[in-house]
Image (cartoon, rainbow, N blue to C red; front, side):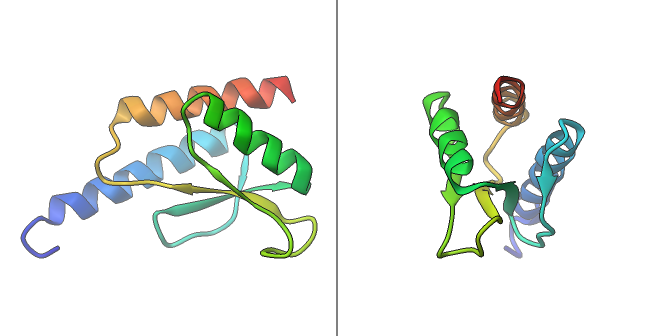
Length: 103
């Protein structure tokens, strides 16, 4: 971490880019101070379908539902890495946008 601070900087830059993009698309993100972004879907079945459809598009966003979280707060757990590129983030945002339009 001390020898390569650029990795941490890249990670937080990626987090901000995805968070800003998802917010601009109208998604509701819970607060997070980690590279894991919780995107609240609400309904457990809808959350799991969304997760499956993203995976079909090559985007892994794990669905989290009760009993892990309270009913009505099901969410996607989106984890970013410093090695993600802007192209990866843009591809993910395109997939989220496409699925949001379809629902």
